[in-house]
Length: 471
Image 1: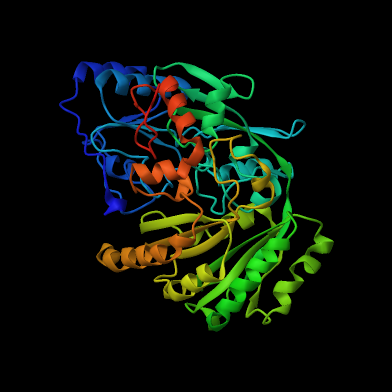
Image 2: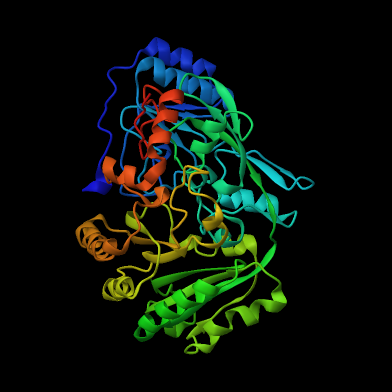
């Protein structure tokens, strides 16, 4: 199956002299298969992934990253880059190669005067939110705080602040990068501008980003939370959501969801484990106007649950973390859509109510507002005309349930795909083949391939949604 496709490249016997030299160059730990902690160190967030690298380099800083990239290149070994290790495809680990593990690189420096932050590649959005919230500032991230800043940003970065402030990559000012040949460069609009363009949506194809510099915005306490309705009203709620979002101010971001209500607070006991539909809202405008903005949602029904109110932004970012713990089996598919048509709504109604587990997700994320106003050729992220991206994610604990969960996702996706605008969002893409990757980068693919040819001509960084180098 496409989710399980693995890099089957295996290393031959390692040159022990070269390994010893490599180990001596590292400040961080070098973990091998016989070392204590190896099995824990090779785990990633998606429990479907079971790969056995030859070496895991726990990098303490940029010098370690340079050493690790050089060792893998010289020894002809596959190389995987681990940041938050949250990506569903499991590209953060490989069979028989070297894992460049940045998870210990968590340095963060906020500049409140310039409203910027520089954060190392091992940071999660929870780390970043903690540091910036102290100054009443935030960078646009996702919706789960355990997600790594690296993978999310390099793939675009959709989240609660997308409609107001754009994608994560739209707020990237510069990035420090270790290239395939071992050089260290800073990519920005002024220096290495082609590389900077490619990093903003082109994924992990171009090097190891050791730190990111982001623009920050005045975001502290927001108005947010879920509205839930009975499943019997799903058709009307989906139409309400579509019409509401078509005229919503940029200050409002809300995603639609089919869900099984989690058995715990803030949800009332009588709703626990009930399949419902809802809108998870985030409003960054003046608090005094929030009730007026969400009035159409409150008038409809009314909702069976209205938990919209003031929340510190890091709380909103982390409120769903318990639903996505590390180690569950994960199988996802996704598409961009330009419009939430009546036909697409009918497909959602056929499969969404069959959501299999409380951890699983059917989300329709808006990618309109500020994200739509960036020209599609200004960054590698291409689908600037799309208003939504829907993700169908089966998350479940027992591998024995894989067949039925994968079938639900694939059937659901097949029913929706005729209404799609093109490729997938990079961060939701599993192992779906070269043609799907080309569709995902759309009209920007050829330029990305040329930049790949310049910065990584041998395709050293190929364990990703791979763009093959061209001249």
